[in-house]
Length: 578
Image (tube, rainbow, N blue to C red; front, top):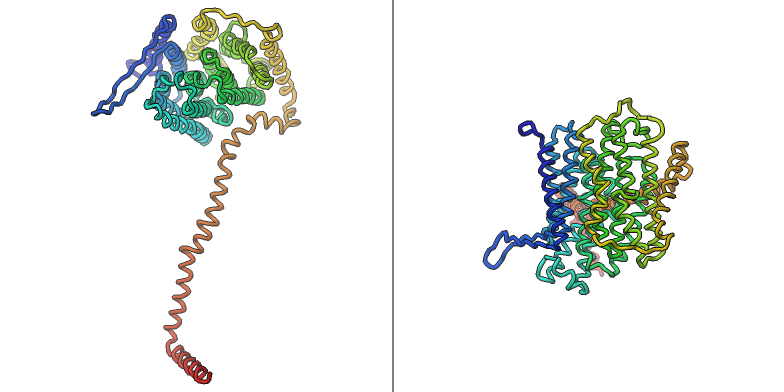
């Protein structure tokens, strides 16, 4: 506390002021097509100089303003959510370090400074995921850190390949060198790094595991910071990826990730994990449209998604806070009558996620699906796009059915209420942005309206699959509530789909069991087996045996002498006779 003002409030005022000024500057840069490239010479020693470079254009400035806006509201919200925490100041400082790392990544046109922000995100995210300091948190933190480490190595290798060009400022070479094989290798490594950070298959397991972090951290991580870093990097590298086999591979992987996450969310009962899987599904959508070459659309959806996903997590946090830390949606019910304002915010965020007309998600999601319909897609990719959209509506309505409707049946008798004024104020800011953010960004990013001409069936297909998906999700939720044992009939299928196609097992026990058992065999058979038998223990045993014989000889010297004499006489006689 400083003069009675908390660190949360000070951070909120500073961040939201910076956010508004950056947004205004970004809009000016966008309208005037203005770019600032800053080179700051940190150290100059003889002929060697260390230079930090920063790129300020409309894309980086608007993204920074959104990150800071969401961060400010999340930190303000944390004042009440984390009020019981003795070390809240440390928590807020960690969150601010997290935001600072993201800022560094956004404004860097240089792979070295990108790596600083990239590693900063990885390190601070580990500290935040293990914040509650229990075994589950430690496991989740280790899975997060090690999964992201693969991307860090890929980025380091990309830096090494950039030495071919004599500079690490990749921004200079994207258009000029995009047909060279060296740039092809660099783009492959950057795609691998982005896949780990944005949790695409086969690195998807860490994203739901990272839910072990406090809810405000989840709201920040899943909206505008950690998981979006990979998408943002690929948006910058888009000129190199267009029309290459790597972009087709990215389209396939992202489509499968979107499909897998949508299926998994329909069989999950943990409130935060459902929202985490919906983030994974939306990341797959952004990556797949990037694979088709529409980087501006991916950026548009990145911003709109950040708004309603942060709101969704904050509403979930308010519900969990009131439910005395219960996250199981089966323990909820009739929240709309207990917490009407939180329920309203949750429903608006859910509808924006589903692409409800004229909310934030509609403008970006509908445009993405229409542009995908216009593109040269095969049937499989087309199916993944639209079926996954239906699944989004499916798990969203299932969540609403479980938590909002029905009877109130919590596991603990605790009066739920909407009296957390600080949390509600934080949610209100994002509620407004979730309603108007999509149209505002649409006018800014696409000032000249383009008309997407499609047949009536394709034009209404997104709406149709959403309605069918919503109906199916509602019916499925009713079936589950009607009979708790219904999932046991199809137990194997439910386990397979609900566990993200066994991805968490493959990422943990699956990748560790083989090397560990091989190591165990090597220890028992080589280190403590043959090498002991032929080495230390074997030599000791043989020397010990020889020493015993030698001792026996020395202890029985007269008998040995007489026996030797007799043998000598016998051998001499035999020799003479022969």
